[in-house]
Image 1 (cartoon, helix red, strand yellow):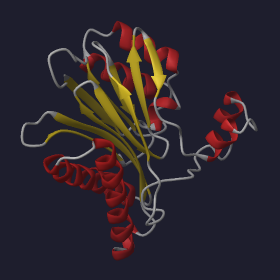
Image 2 (image 1 turned 90 degrees about the vertical axis):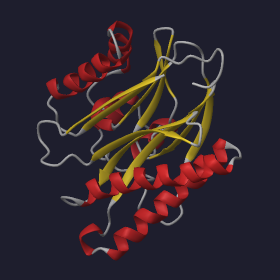
Image 3 (image 1 turned 60 degrees about the horizontal axis):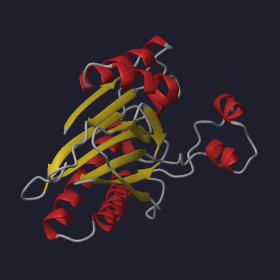
Length: 250
């Protein structure tokens, strides 16, 4: 398995508050962590939140993988601990008061990926030329769409489309969505912040992933497309794959 990632400040913002990580975990390195985060807060606070969240997540998962046990439980626990560290850091540093971040992560082992998610960054599975969204946005407009009160088209233009219903840093208790998905040969996992999904459609993502020569080209093209549409936000894209499940761990 290969991993490629790009994070770009865009054309409007002065600071990139996004972050990403990919790391092999455990003594044998047969568990892989991939994650993206989109910081929320003042001029530098969002940047601090996204970086600290991913550092804490990786640290907790390294300990959990070495200790053994179910990976879905390890991911849920690590997401909670990372959130608590963000809350406490915000309370201890006046410049970071109120900071927060989204976090979307994939813990990949063998033929299965465990997805942990808080906020509106997303995880997608690309298989057979099609993209399937693996996460549900924790946002006001997403809840309204799921409840039938808004259409997808109305949600895209809604004045409160940036309002999150969950994020790291908002409360000591956060309920991360943790799910798992079986992997097949040739699958790709795409993690991204909303700087991509607010500018580039699922159909366009499918086209890029189907036509790119390699993962680096796919990341470059997706980031470029977001910037061509105005670059109004930071954009981060991480692609892992192609998955190979025969003969052992990914």
